Every structure is written in C-alpha cells, then in structure tokens.
Image (cartoon, rainbow, N blue to C red; front, side, top):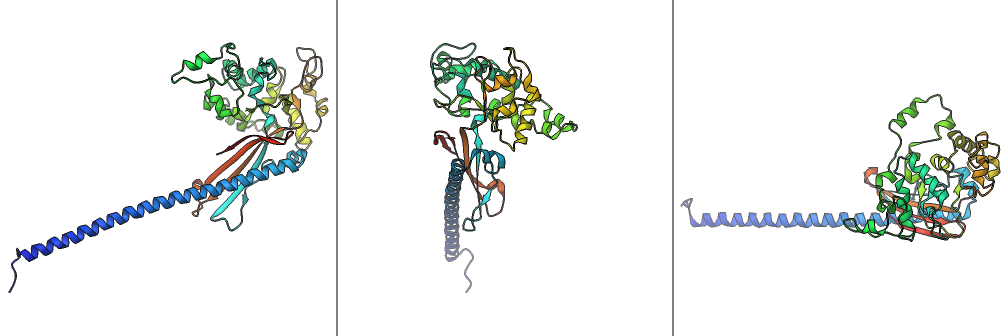
Length: 372
C-alpha cells in the first residue's frame, strides 16, 4: 500500500535530511574557518620565520662590512670600489628558496655633519659651518631660517637664534613638543625641527627639468656628465648627523665628498674647481693621499676675499683659516642587508631586513646602531 505524500514519516524523513544537511553545512563552515585560521597562522609563522632568517643574513652582512673596514687598508677600499659597495652574494643551497646578503661601507664624513653648527667646547655657533649650511640650503632652496632652527635645536641655551625656535615655540605646538637641546643622532630626527619636512631631506630637489637638460648636453665630457647625478640633489646624501668625538675636527673627507658639499665649502668655490678635484680623484684611482696634490689645480688659484688662494683656504694655510678638507676617513656607515626571495621568484614579495651602524675607525668602536 502506498503511503500518502503528507504522511508523518515522510515529513520526519525530510526533517532529518534537512538537519543532516544543516549539520554538514555547519561542520563545513567550521572546517573552513579552522582552515583559514590555520592558513593565517601558517602565513604569520612563515613571515616571522623568513623575517628572522633575513635578519640573520643582514646581521652577517653587517659583521662582514665591519671586518672589511677593520682589516682592509682604506686606500684599497676606495680604489677597488668593490669593498665599499659589493654586489649581492647568494647564500648556499641550504637557504631556500633563494637567499642573498650584501653589505656596504660608506664614508660618512664626506658629508656635512649638522652637529658642527654648534661648537661642542662652549655651546657657541660655529660661523664657518653656519655659512657652509647657508650656501648648501640656498642651492637646495631650503629657507635659510632653517639653519637657525637647527642651531636652536642643538644648543643648550634658551636664546632664539635669528628666526629659529626655542622651547617656547615647541611647547606652543598642538600637541606640545619637547625641544632636544642636544646633538642630533639621525636625519629622521631633523623632521621634528621647525621648518623641516621629510620631503626636504629625503626627496630629490633638482631644479625643474634638470634631468632632461642633462640628457640634451651631449657635448659634455664624461667627467662633466658624472659631476652631478639625481642622487646629488637629495639632501640626505649631503648631510649627516652623529655625535662628534672630541678629536673630530669636522673636516670633510675629499675622497668621499659629493659635488654640493664641495661647492658649499667656500664662497668662491666654482663648478670648474670641483670638476678638477674630481678629475684628480679619478686620476689617483679614487683616492687622494695628500692634499698637496691639489696645489697646482688651476681653478684653485683664485683669490678669496681674505687675500689667499682657494687652495690655501681649503687646506688650512693662510692666516687664521683652519681648512675644511682631509684625506683620511674616520666615520663610516656600515650596512648589512638580508633578502629572501619567495618561491615564485617575485622580487616585490621578497622579505628584506637591514642592520646598520656608524663605526669610528680611529677609535675602533660603533657609535650608532639600528635594525630595520
């Protein structure tokens, strides 16, 4: 006998099927959520693990850079160029998918140290450095009041220098800010100083159309073409910030100085004078051993307002001039970078870690250390 369609048993069977389906769906949902959670945890663990491995690689690169700096003669570092900025080194097959480590050694005293704006011995303004920064900021179209703001940030008094800013200015900000009144330890700190922005320090500030104009100047010699690059128009490549030691004179390493740094050292410095210095540097395989080699460069024979030759002003001869050039580096930036390339080979998805520090070669000690 056929059961009617609306039979109680039929209804109960349908209900059971629906319940089983709902339970299955619920179990599937729970399983999927569990799987997603596991995937997220796995991804997080993998990211952490690869980040740690990349960090170890960066640390090994940093140690390799320090070792090279401590054992290789400085002259050789400059002449080869390889030790100063070697290519990426692929780590052995045990590191998968692909692992790279690199290090770089960059002389930091080829740049202008902001902290020399204030004399360490008496907290007074160093007028030589002040004039140098005025010339540099003029080139980069940075307000000259920013020089006074830097001086006020560093010096330990509460007297406003020109159009700078002391404690009262920073306390009036919303939210209030505390002025340091001490040496600056890194360039990002400069962005806290009145008048400065990250763009001023870390972005290229070449005149509009400068790069296009350079491409059109086909008649220039190779020396003239390499005299300036877009990197030279980044302020961070021309200035630095580290606490000077008692023996640090603030002189600029001629073997590491860029175009704008040299141009700022004297009010009578010319493009031709810098070009001749760079040519001499190239002739000496990247390393000028003795400043006396500059003596006969034609462009350095120009007279300064003080009645001495530019050459004499730069090396410290001629009356009260202290000289702003030296040939031997003391402070070096050592950087180690570790990179782990993903299995798909997409470099944009690489895990990268960086370890860097400033090393005082004369005192044989690290004066600043940071992990990124």
